[in-house]
Image (cartoon, rainbow, N blue to C red; front, side):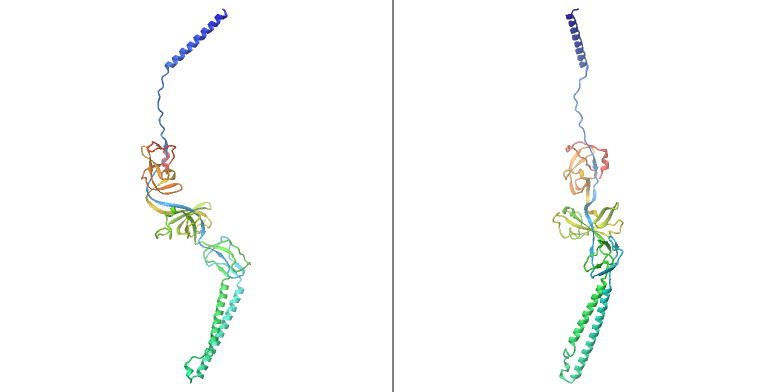
Amino acid sequence: MSKTNRRMIHFAVMVIVIGLGVVGFLALTASKPQLKRTKPPVPVPMVRVSKIKTGPQAVTIRGEGTVRPLREIELVPQVGGKIIFVSPVMVDGGEFQKGDTLLRINPLDYQLAVTLARARVKDSESRLKVAEEEAASGKEEWRLLYQNSKDMAKEPPALVAKEPQLAAARARLAADRADLQKAMLHLKRTELKAPFDGRVSDERVDIGQYVTVGKMLASLFSTRAAEIVIPFDDESLFWFDVPGFTPGNADGSSVRVIARIAGRDLSWSGKIMRAEGKLDERTRMVNVVVRVEKPYATKPPLVAGLFVTVEIKGHTLENAAVIPRSALRDNRIVWVVDDGGQLSFRKVEVARLGTDQAILRSGLEDGDMVVTSGLKAVTDGMQVRISPQSEEHRS
């Protein structure tokens, strides 16, 4: 077979194969069912909701401050001398009762001063007695000398009656008695006694030390009560009573003081006592003073210097609703979902905003379901699904 015939045969076979492929493709395409255009379902977003319960709600105001003693003084001597006694409680943190002797200065010099002062008083009393006798004798001589004279009705002259001598004797006696009182007072001051129930801080004295008048030996603070100064803004002051500052004659609001100390969370009851005299010019805040009675009655105690949180029980709103802070939109709108899953916008009146919650004065009713989760796109009237976990977020 010639070369040309072989090429013709190969070409014919190729044409036949291609034709069979085209026929098969057309047959497969003709049997394929036609696809219909359909719209995908619109996804319904899922939200978490909080079921609202309305009713009386006490507004709680929180603040922070540092505990300080009600009274704190420096222990200083009023007389000088050598310390011969130091109480065992005279250490930092030592506890004492009112009237306890804390320190004693050597009293010998002051005892001698009292003895000398008493001797001078005795001498002055004796001199006054002599002067009185001389005055009486002078008056009697005057009477005998002028008993038949017209001058008898007159008082004897001052020199005859020894009046200057009497006045000098009386003045000297008064001065010596004052010196005796002063010497006795100095002797009494050789014992330094506690002026109140309290504790010692910053102790700087020991036995054998010579102390001078006015030198600080220790700091003492009272344990009868403790105070906490807390700054508040004008809006917060509306919700609780501060005697002498807020309107009315009500007593100060009750307070709960919270602190963590010695690995335990503890709380103490307290009361608002007053506001400090002036507004803080830097912060424009009002410093409110909270008092806690007997802070050292518990163990651990409410020690001075401790940083604490204070919760003040404020005024009560009669028909309020509490919602999570995350549920409030633009500070005045909430998203409410009805039983059919339709979301709607609701305007509310906010009474007070807290760190993690908001108290509403009006705008919600008992049983309303408020959306607490976020949505990327939201419209009034849109459909949503309620998350099964919503029940765990009820207020």
